[in-house]
Image (cartoon, rainbow, N blue to C red):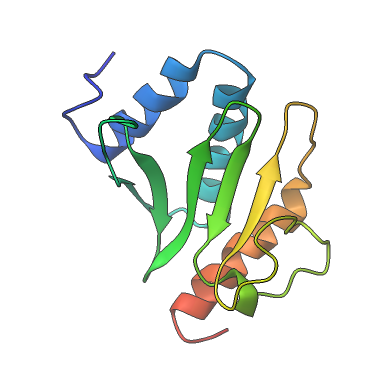
Length: 133
């Protein structure tokens, strides 16, 4: 397994997913797959490393940040940088709803995500980043 403090972003995200070793890793891995299905040219990065989170935060980008994937004890939080400007007819956004820019999806242990709606949200975020949204 790659060292969490060096390596390529893809390896670092894989390492983070594996290090979780529980349902949060499974959720983050599944979300990662859906993002790649929706936007095969997505760029993966690790940002915001600090002593309290040495493995950092996975970030998916295409012409700008699409979303981040943070893990907490009780949830995986996907924060969309420009979520307030995205159509969400399926109501996936369930957190950070009061802000002017971001929106988030909190996924708990037993939460099921609508894969089709999520991929549409990813595509809409990419289109917005490209000025087509």
